[in-house]
Length: 295
Ligand code: PAF
Image 1: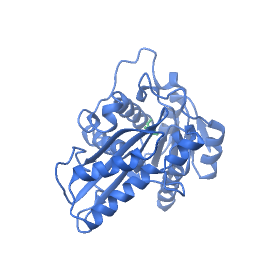
Image 2: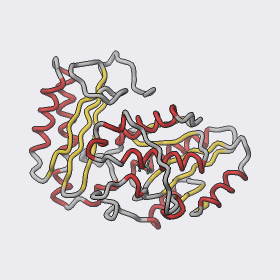
Image 3: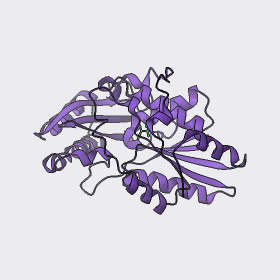
Image 4: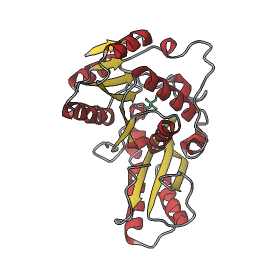
């Protein structure tokens, strides 16, 4: 596995590849867990099925611009050595691990901003977050020029924003969303889980449990959004160490709040345990409704 830390070296590496080479990118902020590894495995499988040369590229960069002033940038778990080993074991061809000064000039003054899908859900409590994500993902796309990029569905809103970025800025990149990977007790895998203390970790299962309970109502009853959101809130409130950030039921395409029942929906939730903010979601559709693949 090749490791590159300088943007110039990366650009040279990209130039040296044949015009026909496929690059498959898995962008990460490190602290790799099974969720990331499942995306890397998807990329590796897709690369191996190709008849032409294909390179799996993982980027590892804790992007400061997607953290607000009071967020957990400093506490974000980092483990470069371990991440490097995991990438090697999972057949990554290139690990791009730049320092912040490689990615941002000290007087950088351009950002990429998405104004619609970013204004709801996590965008409400993290106002600068999606500008930071759009900016860094655009920079990674420009530098690496992948034809395919992989993101996890735990960050459903991020996937929607990135699909919009690709569409509106004409990036010739296919976005593949990988399913949420969970701990045995149902907690969605997240690098931030490492910051939970044992009591918080125990209680954090309420996120998944509250969504599963909502799913039962959706599957079996006539429903409308408000009572379901209340049901989820009540369940989440049973975790004494948690503090609800939001519970929303939205249209999976527009991410706008639902006033009434419809055939496919997304329940998205965010809960703080101490300073650690966890998110999870449930995509639900009536058995006959079209799939959300083409967001
Ligand atoms: O999902 C993440 O880890 C980050 O938001 C991403 C896409 C790597 C951009 O920094």
